[in-house]
Length: 547
Image 1 (tube, rainbow, N blue to C red):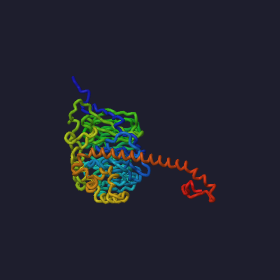
Image 2: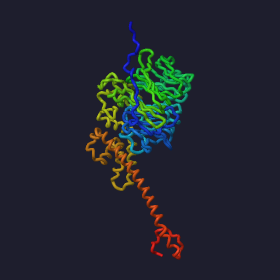
Image 3: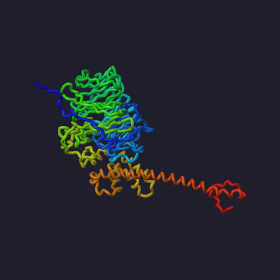
Image 4: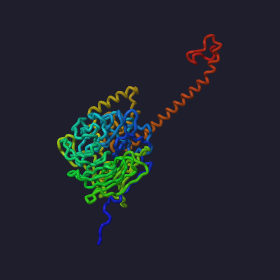
């Protein structure tokens, strides 16, 4: 008689490993806002973290190769008048990020390749609709330039960022909206609310298809759509115990699984990997990351393991699968924010002995291409997300994987132009006019050299006049990593030179003051002999031999 004791799964031995401190980010002043947000957003190019900022709200954007201690004067993205509450990278353009703030405005930003060389205060577009603070921003998974925002006015707005117009407004929540999530094709919307209910909404019709009580506790809850249509929620029981449930959209009132975890009071954020069907539960204030696998077999949600650290986490961000290192069988990567200012990088790995590409671990994953335009989606069309193979379209860059297509930069440029439209071009020209009077001659190219990367995708004619080094525009794409490194080195050198100049200026002032003190007594000694009063306009108005 034989029976199976251990469940068969290739993800049963997944383990988490924190990278060395030299490969993490230090000195980050993470936001102290009490808003229930992850405070962190990651894509294969950049890491964005909401930080403390005086006189408004800001967040910092770091390229993945700039690890170590972050200087206190690092450039920020700061154009909000109130604290930033939520940020989200566009899934179809790795250089575009949206931010929501307490100033009731949503701003969309264009980040240049290589990161920021100066503080960015001019967004691509301002989205103004909400009457109270905006605490949730969420991009559409398949439609290009479609952004969802939710505010404390209990309103949901769906925007076409390319035109800056509101496509749809939803007013079906009686209280504060905690979270929102699109389904796999972007045809349905799942929300949680302070009234303890979860709702499945058809956004284009504005109708609530089904609703149910999610968790009986009064604290915040979260809900996400899984790839095959199931609904996974986290929240609190009536006795303030943290729990998770699994439900079907047809019977939201009857959970398939309800499991209580512990009695901690931190809100749990479910982070979902659709390629492996793994769910990671990360609680604010916790020092652990629990992960589960969802399967068609009972009990449907299988506990795998827990990653433990000594420090509690303030926020967390999850890298898309395009940014994982397939050479080490890394299936997920997290960026944990600690209260001490450390951003710890945690890699989730499947142990394999072979160094070859593991096709069973890496099915075709979400790509950075949109399946639909905003007009097609609002007209009622639905489409599966575009996928890509990590084996054929990936290049190793600093231990991670990003899309390696040579035309990717041109593709991003087209999307950027669609976002920026004519308004940004006029704005850039006005900035150049304001900057030009300071130096009298054309050599302003020297001080602006570190910002060449940010101008390069937006204004091609201006770049050709300024930098004769790249002979032809197509050659800029493959040389981009080297150019980025040289520019970052130049920026660091300029920053060091500025500090040296300031020190020398202070030293010269001190020496001049000391010389004046030494010279002043001989100049004042002949004053009693002079018939006139001794108070002169300046100490140098009379020579020592004039009596």
